[in-house]
Image (tube, rainbow, N blue to C red; front, side, top):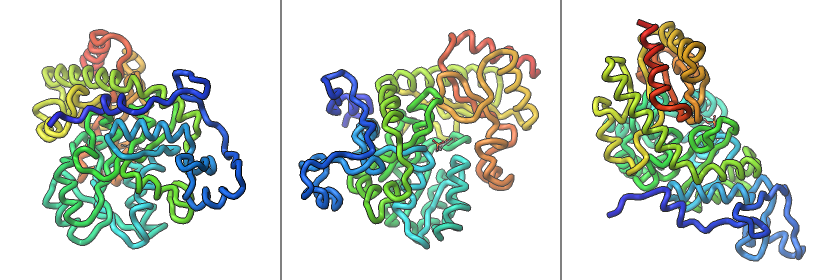
Length: 405
Ligand code: PLP
């Protein structure tokens, strides 16, 4: 069977022309929509007559046509039935968990996830909703099976974990989740196009669009893709987490991100190409580099089995500098002397971003939790950009490493 190709899937989507036939879609900024016949108002509110059934859109916090187009593009890229967008990656994650779980339900989650997700699951949800989470190492399938045996509504993992770059074996996790009656929810933020979790058995995929998908570090945004019934349920007037909590994406932001989707493939391929090159050269130099594209990486074979052809192994690598002080020193030289990149959290930007995870995006984890998650104090995460020439960037990196001794 031919492997799934996200870009071909996107190209099969019906093109959205502008109101006057423009090659780009129009932006629907209205927060409310005119009903021509008063009798249809109750039917629209009861969900019987939407825009496809002779009615119209309801209200800007409910589905908006421009935001919906971006949702359809992202669903096409993931090979999902439907998708919708949110004001941030965190709101996409929170809305998904809240939609799938009721008070007292349980989540089994990877212990190595983005710090905000960890805090949401470990602290916020139990305190506010009674939704409890059991954290496991999702690369230990026996441990996942045991944790699921106690009953869980959701198994939650990141395709490539932040920041340790461990790779989730999505087909096996999907089997375990489904055998236990749970849904597999995957955060695919680090690996858009590279891995297509829904094609591998996941039920729902979430993304922080803030990262690679937008690619310019100028918008906070998120998405949820999955079955149409699930996406519709998020907007239910009585029980929909998006409709009632309201983390609405602005249609202008949806338009801007939508304009960056056509070159996502080019960008992801170039991020991956450069990251692989640097990882190989760093390994040759004897630098302790972590990158799943390298054969030496623990999960290299898993990634080889689940990734799509043509988009590489991702745009993030880590260097273990041993101590926080050495990691900070290297970042400072790279930024202030060699101009290799910027000391900043986040990832997926066109320039290189560098951060020491233990002290920043994973600081929600205690020292013990960081140790259990494999996050050492000197772990430096680099999201490799594609500005400048490869050789120019490599010589900057070598210069900084030489200076470190
Ligand atoms: N998921 C991952 C893997 C992330 O790295 C982040 C943010 O860094 C998020 C989700 C949250 O996304 P946002 O900042 O768009 O809310």
